[in-house]
Length: 340
Image: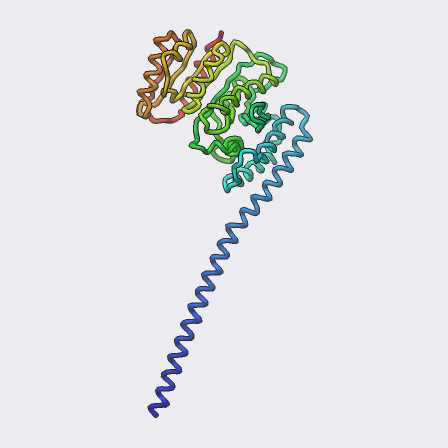
């Protein structure tokens, strides 16, 4: 009897152990299934984005073939060139796919209409092959509002963008941003439309040095083949890294520029000899009181004033390194008062 009970107890114990193992295996399978499902759900949007890329390229090709205006045709061709450009070795990432998807929505609708650019705030994209290194270069082109292609005396504005800490090295980041549903990355002159306005990619966040500096001169040359503008109203400005670039680039052709604006920079490595080149030149400077290089910018301001530049300056109280729209407005208003 005792032996029989012992056998029964052992059998019950074995059944319990087997059941526990089955439950554990089932739980593991369930967890594994969830993991696979998670991977699938992560991969599916990626597949959708790849389809969006193909759709966008086909759409841009179609829009290019239908466009009658040469500038509009160039815009769609430049976009395709930029999206397919592999010469910079920048891998395609998740953000690229998201930007493409937003751009596809835009170009299906208002992005396909000339009025969006000729009487709105969206830029055209221009591209050319650099004669220096044979790579593709790009810039945003904003048209006056409304735009008259026969007008030859629009003022000209060139803005040099600030550093994105390397993010702008990917041209897709900067050049597709204005077509996004949120955070379009359009600065004030793009909305104002006071004249013809370009914003070069400048090889991204390279400080407008070496090839990035050559890129700016090549953009100016490319633009000059497309448009004639008022030689008495030529304006150059930039924010942060762009301000440093504007300070150096202006020196190479001081006679061209009517007025020059420096927002939050330059400041570093500025010499009195460089400042002397700005004698009698209208210069606008603004910086945040709390910027870490505020003292350097003040020193540059003093150099320029001592050199005889016509300086208007603002120190923005309780503010750090920010590109404030109120002061962009001040800069635009100040520039538009200046003429040769």
